[in-house]
Image (cartoon, rainbow, N blue to C red; front, top):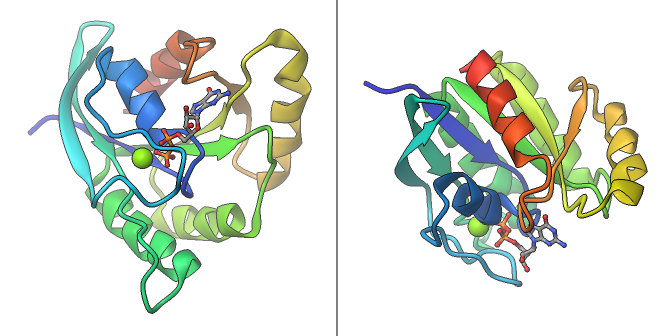
Length: 162
Ligand code: GDP
Ligand code: MG
């Protein structure tokens, strides 16, 4: 089948917004409150003439295990089915405990990973992205899923690792 690119990250970092940006339509559910996207949703996608399957993740509804555990479990399943991962972090917030937990899951997977530093809506916010080098996943790619800034460069890079 087609190669699978999964969008991973804790709630509210802008995963679904990025998926919509890539799909150029409002298919994935975007919400201000965490936990709204249900489960994993796959979309046929195209970039630079290549076909692939794009997987939005979410479904991090609070359950008995607590949010962090739920996020990690869901991420693990999505990573397993992925050929490459875009790990999305909110650059305006910086790396949280949940982000660091996800990094551990990602590392174990040995899948190729791109670090997207999202919500960098303007050039003067790019310094926020640089802090995310601390996650140890290599270069953070500043992007604004909402406005499209940097999205093309991120996708070009993603096609290189997919
Ligand atoms: P998800 O839970 O990771 O799927 O996050 P969503 O895509 O649902 O977005 C959560 C919130 O962040 C929404 O209010 C979005 O409009 C907002 N958001 C997403 N991307 C950006 C961005 O690049 N810049 C800004 N300023 N807000 C964003
Ligand atoms: Mg979502």
